[in-house]
Length: 152
Image 1 (cartoon, rainbow, N blue to C red):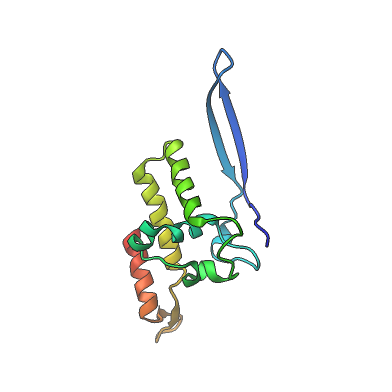
Image 2 (spheres, rainbow, N blue to C red):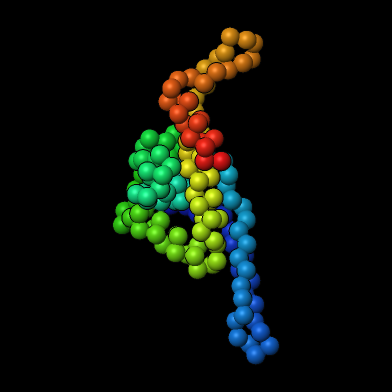
């Protein structure tokens, strides 16, 4: 299985007049946005989605579950990586967000947005009665659309 990283980082390290590190800036670029909605076998989607689904607290709060329940995560049927616990990685991600100064409110907004994206991926449409129109396909799609709306 390929665990590819499809983004780049530019790290700028800042020094004070005595030569000590006084700060740093990290800029991420080339994020592969199309990977959110479509993955190819044997690749997975972004790790943050699997981490979120492994967080017991957030699974209940955001009405999530196993990654196999989400269209954006079940395309390749690869849900776990050998030797990697998504639940532990979620905790590490939260810890890293705290260390770099991302507020609790901003972290919640980030994970709410990720959960909403997963729910939106499960919304299906059927042809409507009017020309070029569509309607929500079923109750399951209505649930996911309502969840996404509530999370945004």
